[in-house]
Figure 1 (cartoon, rainbow, N blue to C red):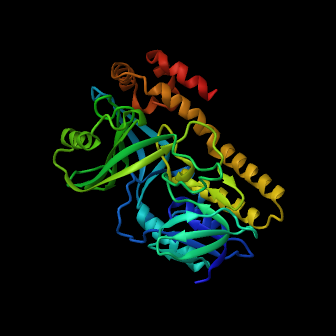
Figure 2: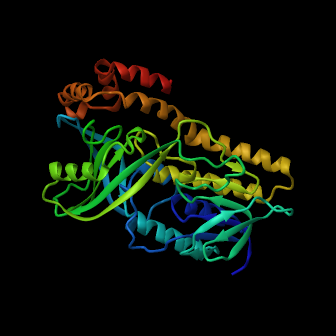
Figure 3: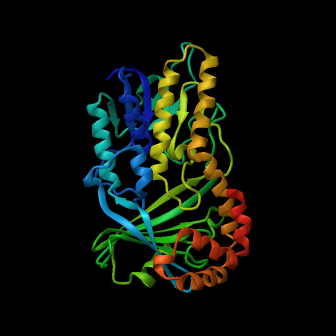
Length: 388
């Protein structure tokens, strides 16, 4: 393996792989190394595995083998278990995320990237006198790169001496289970809201196939440490899916942000969960990370070709603007909406759900849902003003 690369990418998740793919599609391919701490295809990723169809296709066309099912229906359960069924014409996918990442990694290697798997990056130095960075691995080895893409996830602390290191500003905890033995509609996802069930967040059940589900709970960050999320998940499963067999449980982190962040500096660009690209309300993060990585890859090429510090600074500013134009600014607005939605009580959710449940399903559009909720949730008016 060479010890100097044009671009080093840390993390082979959705952001890192889409960044690598973008870079390697260039006619004059730079040398790329993809560093990932794990390569186990059978390793279940702590993720609900749901993605919006439009957002996913915006980045790439999925292989049929990645798609567990096509989803068109959402059933929302209020705290008193009033249910609202909504049909989305745009639809979504439940994907096999582990298989998708495995295939994308193989594609990147076939396109010319080098892979360094089962290795953890411990530290990244500032640029040296000739503008290159040194990456220190857990094995004791080092790699040098002209540009480093940090796609290492929500707890990344790379860049701590360069003002682009930050703890996730709104880090939520999620606990998930893969359960089997439950007859399941593969075109339907379920979302549950309740102060007792998932304080500050929600619970979900997404199909894996006709007999198994991904089930999980996310807690609002202000409730972290005040609730036993394992107990909450067990209670949820016992109440709604008592006949299911728990195959495995997983813990995960969901990083949201609520203020503008610096996300690049000379020779170092951050993307994906490393800059908290998750949608603050839905907590969706796969397509968001893929879009972030794609943008980061294109700016890594620009940075690689920059001839002076002034050009590099301009590229950093342009990258930040590109991300915030794509999704970041919308996420900032949604973060403000989220803070108000977390004040909606179970009583208010129940009142709104009872009204919505009486609307015929073929008339239940998203605009009608919002209009109805505005009459029942006075707090929602304050929340939605942030989207204007």
